[in-house]
Each structure stands twice: as C-alpha cells, then as structure tokens.
Image (cartoon, rainbow, N blue to C red; front, top):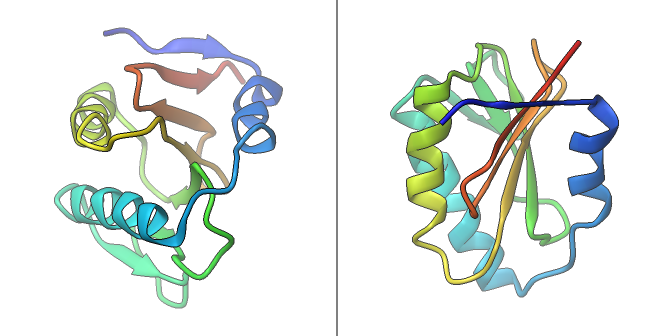
Length: 116
C-alpha cells in the first residue's frame, strides 16, 4: 500500500468531519491506538514528557484521534495500525499532526500523507 499524497487541508478535514462517539467506544479506540504505537516507540499520555508519540484520552470522545508524532510515520507502521483499527466495529481515523509530519491512517485502509 502506497501512501496517498494529499494537502494538509484534506488531512484536517478528517478532524473537522469527526463525530462524537460513546465514551466506552472512544476508550477502546484510544487503547488500541496507544497499545499499537507503544510497539513502535515511546508513548506519552497527555504529552507531559518527551516521547515518540503523544496523545490524550481526556478529550471529547470522537471518531478521530489526534496524535503528535516526533518520528516519521512509515508505511509499515501505517499498515500495522490499519490492521489494529480494523478490529474496531466502527470507522475511526488517527491523525498524526503537530510533530514532524501531517498524515492520517483510516480504519478503511487508507494512509494519507501531506505533500508538503
């Protein structure tokens, strides 16, 4: 799977079109993402320490989760995350923003990267 090169605005659109989910669904989503990313590097809940990835579960429960990535999100990493997201019952998106690159991974098998 090759990443799709898109504009930053197209990646941001996933966040803007995100919808509210039940808290237990969001917790399961967050836990899946966190567990997978911990296999790829260090992870900080709440961003209080330096880590490869950081996010927080203490946000409004949405179908999209924003993660700050201080390492490149590789194709292999995205493919592994897609496999984890496919285990969830409903569609979800992980947006990597605020680190070294903007990209997103969707539960329907897409890996979109900013064409900066």
